[in-house]
Image (cartoon, rainbow, N blue to C red; front, side, top):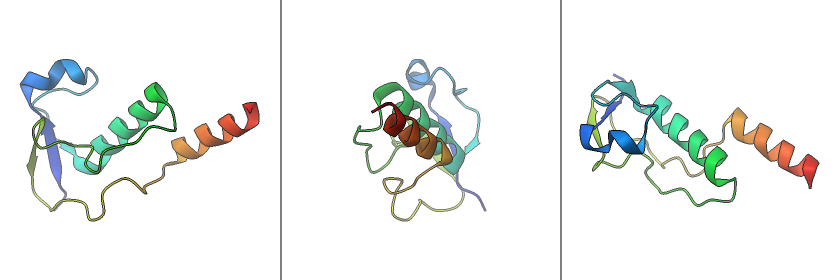
Length: 88
């Protein structure tokens, strides 16, 4: 079973692209949040161990991701880093 997550209503203003109360797969939503933060804050930011804070999100099914997202790379990050190298 996939791990699912939904944003609590009281934090809706912090994540305008996420519909509060709607269930998303945790991996997809964590990737979306990570991508938005990297684009908004830059590639050199320090991401927290858990992008999906249990205070802001409700979880169901599956289990927590082993090892967190800190080492996870995405194709988007690869493209952003390549673009950064080209402009440096």
